[in-house]
Length: 114
Length: 245
Image 1: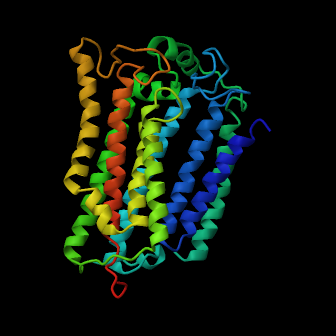
Image 2 (image 1 turned 180 degrees about the horizontal axis):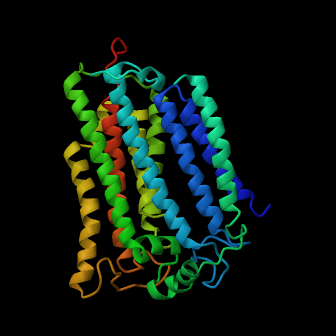
Image 3 (image 1 turned 180 degrees about the vertical axis):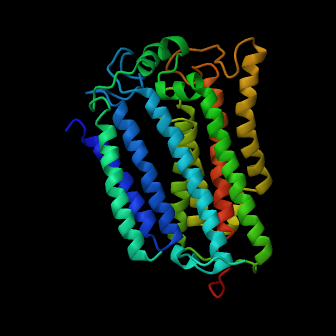
């Protein structure tokens, strides 16, 4: 049990990669990449968890209360921002591909054109 | 490479990768037994030193404020990148004038109600960032959601009318630049770049935390503007539909 949350993160990562590899549509591919990235949130938050700890917010609990680690939570926030920006840029590129090649299927982009 | 070959190769390497990843996470401290000194220290000092009861916000905008400056500019650069990529294509294509789809009156009415509620929740989450869970990033996304709802429940024209391009562009620059300028204010006051400057106020009140609420607000403005700009760019890609009016 004590390593199960980490194994979950590994599983999400590999499932996301499977989606990326087998994708037949660029929008689907971007969503799969977002799934892959979300495994890192699970991993970070799982690492920072402290047994029976509350959120590191001491607004209505006294300051010494047992709480989970705030640093990994701040890192997760950065992680999410990066994930969103990557998704936005890739979707913009997908629109470009559709305009120039008339397809959203990565398999149909095999031939190089001069 | 054929599809079958690719999936076969992936299955092989994924099995290896999974084994390696599982091996590496087995070396981590057991779940629930993490006691890293940095986080433990921040939990102890954030409330007494900075009067911010939300230690995550204190970490993001104070103790690791310089990281967040980089984060702000990642977002800024991505929005500029999307605008550049899409605008170039649009100018080549030059499409026809788009027409609005019509939304039924009840949908529009409920949408306006939700929009007002979202605006209020967004402002609440931003304002209480240093006290309770929330902050500029989270609240900014909620606020941008309210603008997206104007398009969903209303029409494209109202969305554009309520988010004039020059104002959104200005807000985007103001948020990112404001964050950097607040850092310079620290230097003028004689401390390191982005070092928190007082007065810290009373913990648990809106004005507590010194420069944390200011950086929080700058971030909220930047994130809201960034998402509204992204919506605008992607909405302009929708093909002009005809015969719906």
